[in-house]
Length: 106
Image 1: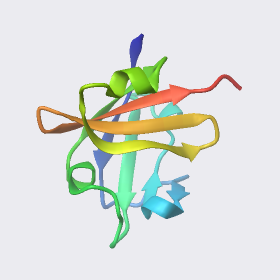
Image 2: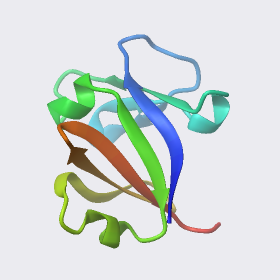
Image 3: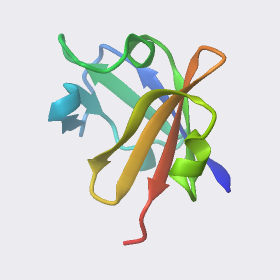
Image 4: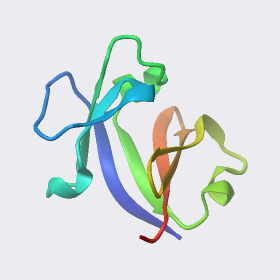
C-alpha cells in the first residue's frame, strides 16, 4: 500500500525547530507540525545529497514494503535510516524525486 505522507520543498530560509541530519548536512522541519504536510529542507554547502533533491520539490509516500517499491525503478538514494524507526529511499520518476518511507510501529 502507498499513502501520501508529505511534500518536501528545498529552501534557504532557516525555520523554527529544524532537525539536523549530520550525515546529509541537511536541516528538515517536522512534517506533522505543518498543517499542509510540508517538509522544508535546508541544505548546507557540501551536502552529499543529490542535486535533484537539493533543487527540486519531492513527493513522499508511506509504504508497507520499501524493497518492493524500489524494484524496477531508478533509485536516486538507496535505503537509509535518517531517524530511528524510519527507513527511506528516493527514486526518480520522470526526472522528479519521489521519496518512499517505511515507518516501523513504535
